[in-house]
Image (cartoon, rainbow, N blue to C red; front, top):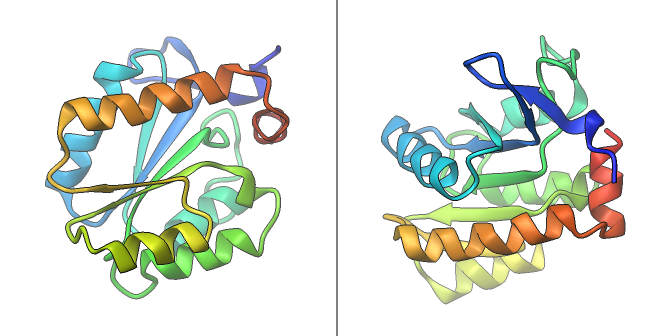
Length: 163
C-alpha cells in the first residue's frame, strides 16, 4: 500500500510514514505521551495541539494548516477529555458528524478512570480509553494495536491515508 499521502517530515528532516496528533492542554502530559509514542512507534511523527478548536482547524486544513506536506493528515489522535472551552466529548461529537474525520482512531486520555466516562467516550466513537498517568506497558500495547491497524490495509486506514 502507498503511504505517500501521510508522509511527514520530523525535526531532523527525515521523512516519516504517518503522523500522530496529541490534543492536550497540559505540557507535561504532552511530553509523556510524546515519549511513549516515540518509543513504541519511532517512525511516526508526533504533533501536539492544545485545544479541540485547533484540532478541527488542523483536520479541516484551516488557519495555517492547509499544507498537508507540513501538516499531514493524522493516522491516530490522542485526545484529552478535559480541555478548556471545547472538551474531548465535544470533539468526539464533532468527529462523529464529520466524515471522513470520523474514521481516524481516537484514543482518549484522561485523569479520571470512571467507567461512565469511558462508556460515553466509546459511544461517541473513541477506539480506546486510557487513564493518566499512563503506564508505558499499557500505552505500548494500545499503540501496537494501532500500528497493526495502520499497516493492515483496512478500508478506513486507506481512507485516512488519502487525506
